[in-house]
Length: 417
Image 1: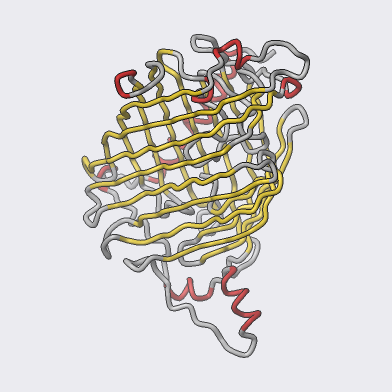
Image 2: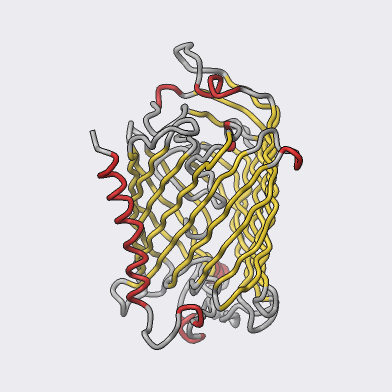
C-alpha cells in the first residue's frame, strides 16, 4: 500500500513543478505584478490567414472554384462566434445531441478578451444539460465578472464516498439541478484581482435506486434528502497571465475561492469550502507551437457538512474538466486533490489538426474529517480539430482510461484547462 507521506510528496512535487517553470519564465528586470500578457488570440495576422479551421474546410467544399478570404484576424469589439451542432458520446451521457460553442469579444479595443461559452445537450439517458459560463472584462480591465449558470435534468449514478469506492456499488440517482454563481473581481495591481461573489446550488426531486447488492448506500448513510440548497458568499482571488483564456500557449493562472454557506441565506446547512486552482503553460520545444500544461485543482471542505451532491467530485469543477478516464461523479468526498499534465502538439502545419496526450491523478477522502484515500490515475490521448482559427477554439476529442476497467470518449469544445 502506498503510504500517505509518499502520496503527498508526489502531489507536492507535481504541484511545485509548474511554479518553478513559471519562475524560470520571469525576466529578472520586470516585477511580476507589472507584467501583462495581452490575451491576444492571434500573434500575427498573416500567420492566422495561413492557418486553416473547420469553417475553411466546409467553405472549400461548397466554394470549390472561389477562393475564400477570412478578414477577421484578431478579436475586436465585434464578437467572434464558434458554434458546433453535433451528435456525441460520453460515459455519462451515452449518445447525445449537442450544441456547443463560444463567443469571444472585447468590450473595448484594448481590453482583455471576454468569453461566453456553452455545451448544451439532450442525451440518450434523457438528460437535459444547459450550462452557460461567462467571463466578462470591463473596458479598462479594472473589473472581471465571472458567471456560471446551469440547469440539469440529470439521471446520474453515484458510487459511494472516497477514492477507494468500487465501481460495483453503482447507485443510480436522479435529480434536477439549478445553479447560479456570479463573481465580481477588482484589479488590485497588474494581473492580480480580488473580489466577492454569490453562489447558489439547488438540487430537488432527488431519488436513488440503492446499491445493486441491497446494502445501504453511502448516500443513504450520509443523509438522504429529497431536496437541498447550498447558498452563500464567496471570497475570490485571481492571478491570470495566460495569453489566451480559450487555448493558452503560455502563462500562469491561479484562482482561489473560499465559499461560506449560511442558513440565513437559504442554505440547508452551514458549511465552508476552499478551491485552489493552479495552472501553468509553456512551449516545448520553446521555438515550437507545442505546449506542455500543468494543472492542480484542490477542492476541500473546511468545516460543516455539505449536502451529498455538493461534496467535491470529479468532473464537477466549474468547466467539468477534472477526471478524464472516469465517468462524472465516479469519485466523491469531502476532500479532493487533483493533478494533471497534458502535452499539446500540431499534426498539420496549417493548424487544422493537433493532438494531445494527458495523465492525471486524483485522491478523495470519505465523509468530512476523514483522510485521503487511494490515488486513482487516469491517462489517454486525443485529437484536436481547429473550429475557429481566430479565437483558436478547438474541438477536443479524447479517449481516456482509468482503474477498474474505466474508459471512454470525452468530447467538448475548447481545451479542458
